[in-house]
Image (cartoon, rainbow, N blue to C red; front, side, top):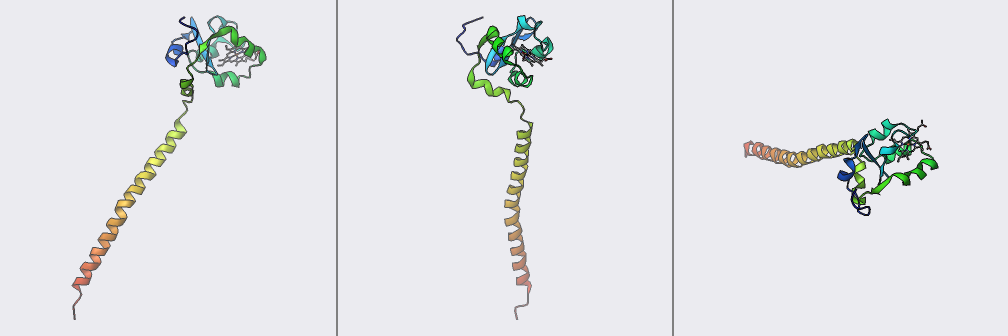
Length: 137
Ligand code: HEM
């Protein structure tokens, strides 16, 4: 498939996502494990679940030994475009939550910025009004 030297984009890798054509990304390199599905000691399900995706974390978590790491070369399909490797950090909920909190506290600060001067103005003019009602003797 295509030139070997060209960095692969995530879109190019993610189409290889089934049992007839299965690629996984491990540490920014793509591996064609189609012919390894039946022989993988960890089973084909895990590879198919990771097909077309970044499986670096899963690969490390499975505790692969040096034998597995040496096998990688056999399946090497290409280098992944380094500028898109950050796509694997998909777990954004905590950050999102923080942004939401920041947003709401920012809103409160803005509201206070408007309300406090208004309250001072209100109190001031009420005071002036009361003062003008006092008998001038
Ligand atoms: C080209 C990629 C891969 C190769 C060459 C490979 C190779 C191997 C090998 C040789 C073993 C036997 C234990 C060892 O020598 O470390 C193994 C076990 C295992 N692999 Fe992979 N693997 C690959 C990708 C993956 C991926 C992406 C996952 C998870 C998504 C995975 C999950 C596992 C698990 C869970 C075991 C443990 C099986 C057990 O001990 O019961 N592997 N793999």
